[in-house]
Length: 205
Length: 205
Image: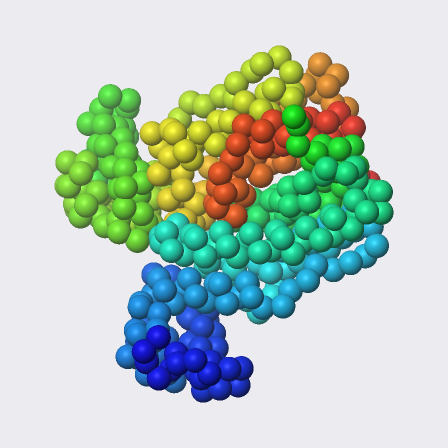
C-alpha cells in the first residue's frame, strides 16, 4: 500500500491504476487463453498490457498472483442467469451457457485454461474454486425463485441443483472429451428439474 | 517393426520387450503422477525404467507418444465395476470408485494428471477419450443387467446412465474444486437410478 499506484483514491474507476489493473488482468486472461498457464510470464503480460514490469511484479508478485487476480476479477464481472419462467428451461439455459462458454464464447480458451491451470497451481485452484462458488451462488437464484413458485419443495438446496444441471456438460467437455449435443442438455435439465420437484435435493436428516 | 525389440515373437508376455514396455509405461505414469505432464522428459522415463533412451525414442517417439501409450495401457488393465444386485447401489459403488480414484487410490495423482495433460496435448486428449470410453463401456454392464432385471425400461442408454452417475463427482473434484461427501454420492446415485427407472435415459425419437 506504499506505492503510488495503490494509494487510496488512485484506484477509483477510470483512474490510471484502475485502467492499468484492467489492462494487466485482461492481458493475463488473454495470455492464459492463447498460450496456457505454462507459457505465461510477467514479461509477456507486462508487454501486452503496456504496464511496466516492475509495477506488475510489485502489485501481483508473479504469474500465480496474476492468474489468481485475473480469475477473481472475472468472477466480479456482471453475470446473471437467464430467466425463462420455469425451472426446467432455466436449467437448460444454464447448461447451454456452460456449453457455449467452452465452445463458442470469446472466452472459451480461458475457461478451459483456467481449469487446466488449477491442476498446476494451488493458488489458481483456489481462484477457480472462488469463481465457481460465485457462479453457483448467482445461478442458485433461478432455483430459489422456482421454490417460491412451488416447482420444488422448501428445503431444496439451490446450489446442489445447479451443480447437477451443469456437471454433465463439464464432464463431457473436459473429462470424457466428448461433444455435447442439444439432446444431452435437454436430458440433463429435465432429469435435474424432475429430481428437484421430487425433493431429491432436500438434504436428509 | 525392424528393430529387435519389436520383432514378432519378442513381445510375448514375460519376454524382455514386454518387460521393458511395462517398465517404460509404468515409469511414464509415475512421472506423470509425481511431476505432471509439463515436467516429463524421455530422459527421466528412460532413467526411471532402466530402458535405454534410444529404445524409448524409437518405440514411442517422445513424451506425447509415451503418455498416450501409458493411458492406453492403463485402459487395457483388468477392471470391472462392482455388482451389488441393484442399479442404485451399483451406481453408488461406481461413484465411490471414481471418488476414491482421485483421493485415496495409489494412482490418484495419475488420474488428475491425465485430465490435466489432456488440456496440453491433443494426443493425450485422444488417449483420455479412449480411456474414458473404455470405462463407460465396462461400467455400462451394470445398467444392462439392471434393464434385464426390469429396473429400467428397454431402450435405456446404459453409457448415458454411467455418465450421469459419475459426472457430479468429477465436477466437484476437478472443476468446482469442492470435497465430495458420502451424502453427495448417495444423492447422485439415487437421482440417476430413479431417472433411469422413469425412462429418462431412453433416447427420444
